[in-house]
Length: 327
Image (tube, rainbow, N blue to C red):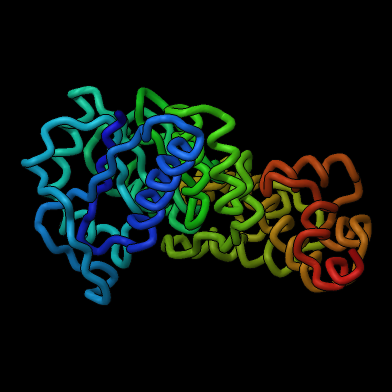
């Protein structure tokens, strides 16, 4: 029997508590139907018997208090809600318990922005981690000692797991089912819950909005120039001339301010524009490619796939309403 302890932090997301409870309970039912013994013993664990969630809109009744759970096999840290630094502070009493359980052999898995609470334990230091793409910059600012794998759906290192944003955590839950039970049961669960089991990137869902709240007005000027001239082919020299600095100085300041190199930023801005074009207009891949300043089909395809996890034509077919109507 695998003991699964789903934490119930204050200011957490109700679905990120209910969904793993539902999944592991459903897997138990699948096993029983197949004539096998149920595998998971699932408990909701918290610092109090009643925990208010989502600004007090919901109350969850826990099955056990922290001190009553001395041993477990898997700790689930659900997504937090609202002001994340404040939520971490609200739940600081959970941190020693998470650390103690991991030291005693339990695996720990964070769902979406539950990674912020898991990161505050120090267990992720010098390790890889995933979280919601929309919170990656804030995560990197708060936890620079952790290697954030941007766009990733699932990371796993030394018995510590993390997932991408929002519904991406289902892929981590299915990964755990496959590990603890088998591939066939994970596939059955994926079909039951209508989840794409092998999705490995949240890049297709990410919206790039360049970090501008950094105080370096010269860098911001370059950012705005790039964003206003999507179809241009930029060089470091030409961009450095805009703010009258050397290209090495521009690179250093740009990386410090935005978290991206100049080249990375240009790629992200252009691909974001391409995504919007694919979603809105009935243009083919070549037309969109030229609109955003690419002339090499392979280069455009490679960069697009690196940043979104799928090809340009796959993205167009997935999100363009007119294309969908024709399929």
